Structure formats: structure tokens, C-alpha cells
Image (cartoon, rainbow, N blue to C red; front, top):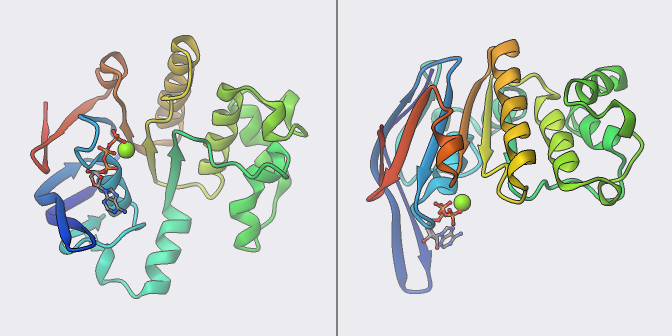
Length: 219
Ligand SMILES: Nc1ncnc2c1ncn2[C@@H]1O[C@H](COP(=O)(O)OP(=O)(O)OP(=O)(O)O)[C@@H](O)[C@H]1O
Ligand SMILES: [Mg+2]
């Protein structure tokens, strides 16, 4: 289970301080496919970063299976992030000089746990076994996002955080990508938290959240 308690985050830009998240509480049960909607600038990406251990809250806490993340020493937080969380972004963040297979293998290489056959089977799972040697520029947007999804699964995470993963894709491809994420959620029993502007996609969530006024509520 993923929970946030009384989370607070503001950004300082010069003399100004902008509060983005204020006393936010959230509970996402395990093995849930949850969606988050909210206006641009409402703090969705900020929240995902806090939930995934990428950014530190000013106050409050995030708990994963009852372990408070930000009370962990830095190396353990880093390990949790690498081992337990997968991230997918709107702009795929693939390394251009690497092939699809090498991009998927990268998170494991960083940990010294290379196993190309596992990366190969992940590319198969996302329907890209015929494109393993292609570089990102030789792939369509939807294909690049499939590579990014395979990469996010490489270290077998329990939690997948997806920030507008279909924002750059046409409708048909977008829905295919969401179907793929749903399939992965069902097969691997992964908790998925997906930010989307698309209300059709948002409604596919088993649990649906809305962000506004620096807080989040369940719909
Ligand atoms: N590094 C930063 N420094 C200063 N302000 C920031 C920073 N990151 C985000 N903000 C501000 O925090 C607010 C929330 O940003 P955030 O990116 O979380 O919104 P969002 O809901 O993801 O928006 P979008 O739907 O456009 O992606 C915005 O007003 C933004 O300007
Ligand atoms: Mg955002």
C-alpha cells in the first residue's frame, strides 16, 4: 500500500515561494490501477516525484507498505527507488545512442545485474521483439513508449508511476499503450499510478483521483 500523510511541498523561485502541495493525504491500495487527473500546474508531477522518492517533501511523509520513505538513509531510499519503482514519462527519456534492447537493459546494467534475455522477453511482452536493434530515432512514438515501459519493468518494480505516458501519442496508440499497462497490472500485480488529461483514460482507473487546491481526493 502507498500512502501520503500531510504532505507539503513548495518551490522557491527568487524571493517568491509557491506552495504546490499542502497537507495532502492519499491512500492507494496495493495492486490497484489508479488514475490522477487535474489542471495543468495543479501539482500532479510534483506529487509523483514525492511518491517515487525523486524529490523530498517539505513536511509530511510517504509510506510504502508502512515504511516511511524519507526516514530511510539516502542509500536505502536510492535502493528502494531502483528496485521497487518504475517511472514512465510523457517524453520517453530514452538514450538515443543505445538500441531498444540496450535501453531496456540499462537499469539492470547500472546495478551490475545484466541479463539481456530478460530485457528481450520484456520487449516481447510489449510487442517489440522485431525492433530490438533499433535506436529510438528509428522507432515511432508509440514504439518508443513501449521501450520505456519495458525499461520501467526491468527491475521488477512493485509500483509503476506514469506521468502522462500517452500525452504525445495519437488516440489509437494512446489506448493501446493504456491497454498494455492494464495487462501488465493484471499479470504482474503491480500498483500503477497514472497521470492523465484524458477523461476516457482516467475513467479506466479502478480508483480515480482528482488534484485540486493543493490536495487530492478520490472521485
Ligand atoms: N522546479 C520547480 N521550481 C519552481 N516551481 C516549480 C518547479 N516545478 C514545478 N513548479 C511549479 O509547481 C506547480 C506544479 O507543477 P507540476 O509540474 O507538478 O504540475 P502538473 O500538474 O504536473 O502540470 P502539467 O499538467 O502541466 O504537467 C506549477 O505551478 C509549477 O510552475
Ligand atoms: Mg506534469
